[in-house]
Length: 317
Length: 242
Picture 1 (spheres, rainbow over the protein chains, first blue to last red):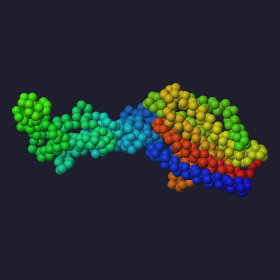
Picture 2: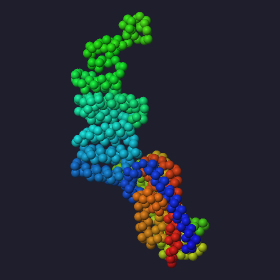
Picture 3: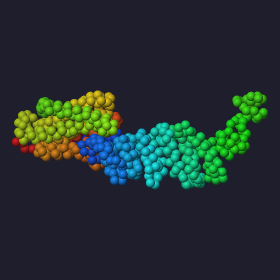
């Protein structure tokens, strides 16, 4: 080879290394943004066949599932291993997370949660709210030692992922919150007395959060509805407050909580101080407990019921 | 340039004269179409399966075409065909570039047939092919460029059978990524990372890849193949031919 040719080759080699090397570094950074789940994928991606291999393993897994009668202590680790292998090859495999976690939920709930936690970390599955919901459900129902704090975290995640959240997801979040609060101290030194009290405390917390999210959707990652299904949260709180008032008339913890409900939720509402029953315009006594209530909607001059700006009986303003 | 294109055209013509190539492409398309029947077996994932199978088989086709270089060049060297060619006013570098271009064009046509076949089949069984899938196939086609350069490098460096194994392993491992990300110019410049051209997950998921990224990846593939073929050319330049 001539010296000149060799020199030309060497120059071409150096230039191409610089160009290719520079581009590769840039591309690697850009790829991280485009291929969001690549970091979770098995790096042993022989010929780039991970996804195809995951599909084949999935079909084999289905065959295996068909061959067993039930998921027990013996085959649960095998199922987990098979699922783990599939999900390492294809971390976007939503169906495998869901079906696998459901299969393992009773016999190996921790492993089921481990699988679902991985799904929750995958940005590509950020709209798949069923997966964190399932994880929360397993944490609060199938674990031997129920982890309500973890369940709450997962239910919250499920709510954030779906906007607006399904009523049953919201309900599960509030129930997990209340279970977590049981026999613990809530705000202002209030000790939670029983399940209803815990539920009321979590509803107060949720209500103020939903109000904030309504005013500023960025607070909770979306607007949270102030109710589940047909029942609104204030209605549910009112019913709980009435029950607690009847059940624990002299308990200081309940008293403080009810005061907080009045202050935070029912400020300015026409509710009997004693029994939490709403009263109507013109009523001077509570129809439920006969306590005196602060009347409203009456003419100050003649005491007749006012329907507008002026009194219908005497014409006073 | 005429000499390079003459070598390149002889390479692709030889391949396209073989009827078995078309038969194999047809078999690949039939295999892709057969994924539709896995509806029950995969619990309704036959659409994703068809996409993954098409990308997998297209990659395999691309690898096989690239690897064919490791048979062809050592064979021409040992049979004396290369010596005859090089006795004409044709440089060794031109011969290698001609072979590389010929192989790339062959691969592009074959993978192109498979892509078109997939589009037809997918359209027939499901709906219109998503843009992301087309991008995925285009990137597989683009990956032919660095793959062929790797094969060319090994074909001049090693004897026939060893070169094939070495090139196959090098291509396969190039998809596994590397831990040399932080060593600038070595990563991507000397050690290839075919992962950069792998957007198959995005293709199946339906995420459209930025055109700029695709263009940059193509330029990277070309730059890397310039490096690999230049090194191959230097090695070939000092090689004793029969």
